[in-house]
Amino acid sequence: MTAVKYADVAAGMELPPASYRATRLSLVKYCGASGDFNWIHWNERIARSVGLPNVIAHGMFTMAQAGRYVTDWAGDAGVLVEFAVRFSAPVVVPDDDDGATIEVSGTIEEMLDDNRVAIGLTARSGDAKVLTRARAVVRLP
Amino acid sequence: MALNADYLGRTFPPSEPYEVSRVKIAEFAEAIGDDNPLYHDREAAQAAGYPDVIAPPTFPIVITMAASRSAVGDPGLGLNYAMVVHGEQRFSYTRPLHAGDVVTAQSTISGIRAVGSLTMLTTDTEIRTVDGEHVCTGYSTLVERGAE
Image (cartoon, rainbow over the protein chains, first blue to last red):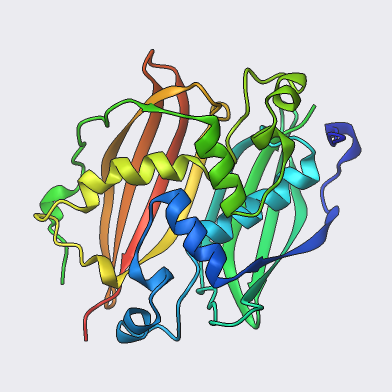
């Protein structure tokens, strides 16, 4: 991987969008890997009984996709200094082969000192904006 | 159900030491669908200047969530877990976690506030190596939706 350099980046630059998939299998795997077995992430009956439209992805699964977006772009996975999101809408994952799609895009918001760069992120699933106030600060070479 | 406001500011004892393993990092990376070699290949990680495979940026949630369970799962707090969704999450990193790190995590309840029928619970969890080096702090806000 080629690491993006601070000198190659400027405020206002748009990063190429990417999309990621969340299926029921993804969520079951994420339950196991994360230790978060909240029923709303795998049990449709309970998800509906608490007023959700269906099983929903873990917020942290969605944040992980946004993180992957940043680290894939930066070319080094160890560059994050700050990473923050607000989960504004659930990623609803139907019980079918396609699951849900999470589309992530980003813009260089601000050039900071000490080779740090702030990236504003957006994530959508269907018509819903699933992350708001999503921002990553990375330190580039 | 309202949460017990007496818990605001309470710091819970640090977790037992947690050893970050290559296997757990690989499992987590696979679960999020990320095949980045820095998570899977020790030589690639070392070539990039890390002591061993590093963990994805959201991996610390595995450790912070387990630690904060002592806080959010305390019956005296009164959180109804089935009504909980994750509202906000932030991490502040000193460096990435890597395989071989042995860390503890300590949680503090830093916010309890009601917004309409919702109750927001914020927990700050610091991850440090057993030698005291700061690795990462996670700030989690859980939202308990009001019962009908």
